[in-house]
Length: 186
Picture 1 (cartoon, rainbow, N blue to C red):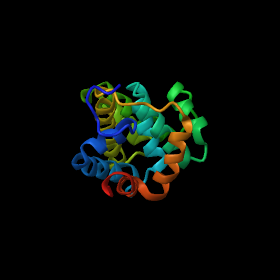
Picture 2 (picture 1 turned 180 degrees about the vertical axis):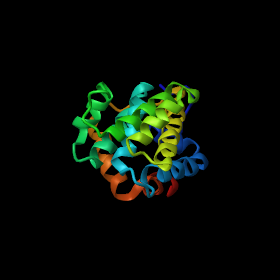
Picture 3 (picture 1 turned 180 degrees about the horizontal axis):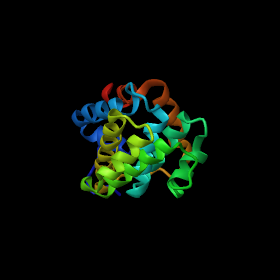
Picture 4 (picture 1 turned 90 degrees about the horizontal axis):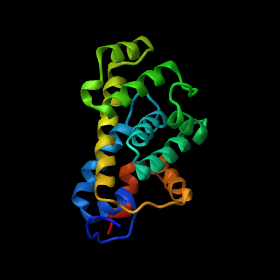
């Protein structure tokens, strides 16, 4: 049961966006830029970072959502997402992706946990400054989103199809497109 009275029964962050639509647009614009914008990391890799951090934060809604979104955009699908969640060190990701996930994990523990050694290791595996920047910002943003969702005790759907159905729409229309369909239009 949410800690505040929402004007909708929609789960997770969707209910919060419906409650305060004036916050929905800027928050979704940030996610759109980070996860859907141009870059050398694929959309699936960026979603994987978001899911990984959400899993570390034990935010069930955000992990389930972004795991589904990553799976929909990664050739290896949910199997890879679950392997990263369960044991990032043995997951079959590239050395560069593993180094970036190490950076993301450090951000999740605290911004000052990102050390020069982690950044050097990521660069040694081919990560660019933009990829390192975006990894840190994705991780930091998802720490905020996770705390937003869990801090207000939002409703959590248990049906995995809820997340996979939405994943297809996010992949096709992006976050702002889906937001416009769901929240802003009303």
